Length: 259
Image 1 (cartoon, rainbow, N blue to C red):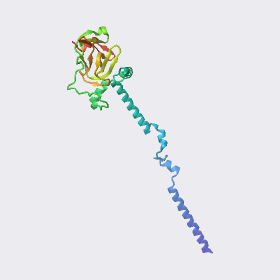
Image 2 (image 1 turned 90 degrees about the vertical axis):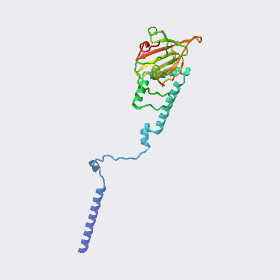
Image 3 (image 1 turned 90 degrees about the horizontal axis):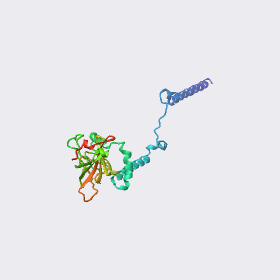
Image 4 (image 1 turned 60 degrees about the vertical axis):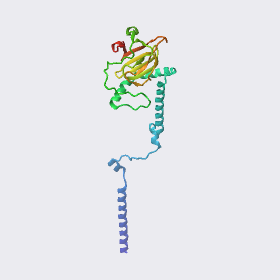
């Protein structure tokens, strides 16, 4: 009887030891909230993706990106066609776009800076390339648009001068720059306005025809148009020329000798 009682006690003791070992093992493998905070793992990070993230960030959806890209390309193409088509019916639209852009952006200055820093930009449309001159021309050294006689001076006109010269004579750019406007200007007829890198502008008005396009970069001495005449039998013609610096027109005679 005694031996049987001891056997039962040994079995109970063994069972308790096995239970204690099992409990200790479970504690080691279990991560308690206190242990998480103690060792700095306050949040569990999940790297699973899903449609929910895409819905909360619509700007990164591919269809929106492609739509914006296509819309931008169409806008650039429409503006390019607008200014390359010299149809009179589009003059009002061109003037509206021109007035919106002309005071906010110095095309010639930015183009000149870009080419000095990075070289020639890639041409998306067949514009004429600007050639590098052999040596830099002084700011005060301008080409003569077309030699002739001043028949209406700056004092009488208030902005520019009228030059009398031969019929059909080529009118040339006094310096390189960006064609800011090419079309019909109220009071001046067919007109070309060139914006130069020094932020000055040269105006060529009352032309028979125009040989350049808006936003085309042209060289010094490039033909911008020809001299017009009101009488087909007359061998003489005239053109209008103005020189603008900042917001004010100055007397062109101060910078150019026409005769």
